Length: 325
Image (cartoon, rainbow, N blue to C red; front, side, top):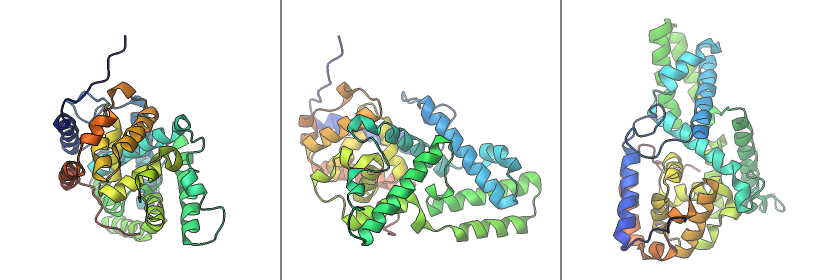
């Protein structure tokens, strides 16, 4: 007999569970071998680990070639610089989880993840700014998922501040380990960073679409089958002020308690939150019986949820520094 769904006897239990997950996750400095936290009973999935490893190698190859003109040191740079840069590792893991959710999108009635109805409907008619933003999202999302099939990722999946820190770490390692000319390395690094245009990145395009469409507006906007996982998380990033890597890490929680609190902090109705959590659980292959009941979610006040999320935002090392779209 399947175990019965747990019932929270008071809303404080759900809030404490969510806050415990948040504080554990925020304490992590880097990806440590097979686990994000050595003492946490949430081991990383093998497919997420494998894809994250591919992303690390892909990024190291691109950076080595850009900095030295030769990708021969890519494997060493991957181990000694890319994996050693905690913000990059966290973000690449988040991108791996995002890819997995998109690949499973057929489970929620979305057979083509790069064409969510919410975005596709904006391309059909007018040639206005919103239509252009929608087309840009479709192209960027298609490229992201297509390259992930080959375990590859673009440099512009990293936010500017993360890329800047990673490039400087790579320069320092190359200079110390292989005796490369520091002047040439720094010149190449400056050229790489100056060529980076955040406005052309996929995360920026998702956020710009949210901005132009004024998403989220109402609880009705949180229909996972209309928006898809990537746009849904971009909406949450915009509404809650948490970074994408933190939000995608929440998908690893068996009961999705942190995600539930974030949704309530955004003013999403308890019943709508319950449906959205069920969709996320299906995409993430989580047990629906572990999810909180709609009645428990309705008991979470927006004030209590907002207070918790504000604390998590203060602990988030990659929290966005303001709208740039």
